[in-house]
Length: 317
Ligand code: FES
Ligand SMILES: [Fe+2]
Image (cartoon, rainbow, N blue to C red; front, side, top):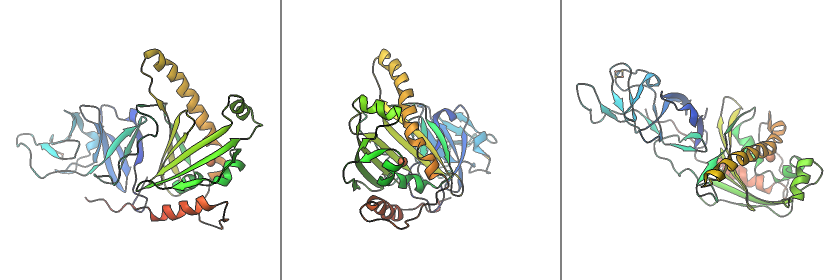
């Protein structure tokens, strides 16, 4: 799990469906927390141990949109503030720790502290995003290997069979952000690629936005779905990825039903693309290495940005 020293960013920690009627325990940023939903369904993340005597709040009840400790019934709201002590009222200054918490694409993300440095990035080009079922993947490489992959233009051809047509443009538009835009031609040969060319999708205008090092948004500027890759370290030199595919929500119920099928197709297509990377990033221990001027300039920019990203510090108690 993400720890002290990792970039400050939004980290995916659970699937939406894992937040049921009971608090859901997580370990992240070298601490223990519980996730739960308030009365409106908004997710919250607070410290796992009760301020009174340290009871485990993963055993608490969710009551009135807050947590009620299983031992003496102290209640905490979504900000971790103790709002009620049975028979006493509410002490004014008692609280437990809290993390900023959002839900996107049926995945719960947390920030390493109560106030994020930057808001969760908007999903580009989508007003009301609707997500396909997230796909959860394990990788035997650190997060940086996958982040680096998005800026490694050379591999687009050697691994993905997409011939880059112009010099990629790398730029940062906000703190925590680095993006790259690439125009590439689909190389014919494989059935799927031949079909893309036949359907008029032979040229790809891709925009890849990386936020905080671990959150990647990919879209084809010509239209179609947006892919979001949210990653979190999972032990030494391994990570977990939530692959989320998003499309503009259709308003009519007929459109909604048709879109359900389309999202499954998008999900399969996105996975087919990401799957090509699995054998090449598996076991990778990314380093700056011997970069070739001209071919590896975007990688050079990536490493400069990556090393300058603000890092997680010890959380307050
Ligand atoms: S330990 Fe939680 S209310 Fe006493
Ligand atoms: Fe790749």
